[in-house]
Image (cartoon, rainbow, N blue to C red):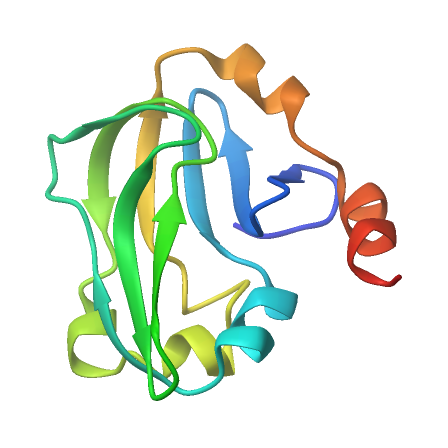
Length: 126
């Protein structure tokens, strides 16, 4: 799933890791630290169509609620049901078991508009 070579990051801290035309998406480690203790995640439904850059999920923490923006456009093919019982996975493993959903990308070229891992790391380390 997550590895530094096949994943891209949005400036809003979402990541997309592509395998063929399917991407697994979630939030970055930096974002989960900023949000702090996640207590609830509202995910889109399987079959929902999402557009790059638009809100498609909500992350609630002890601090506040935050929108999750789709890093790429397409149709949701699977959601991480484990987050319903254990939303803390987002904090514990944001690049692993804390993934949000899988999406069949409508336009895989949208990945090119996102930052690679090194570029993202530079953008959050100022």
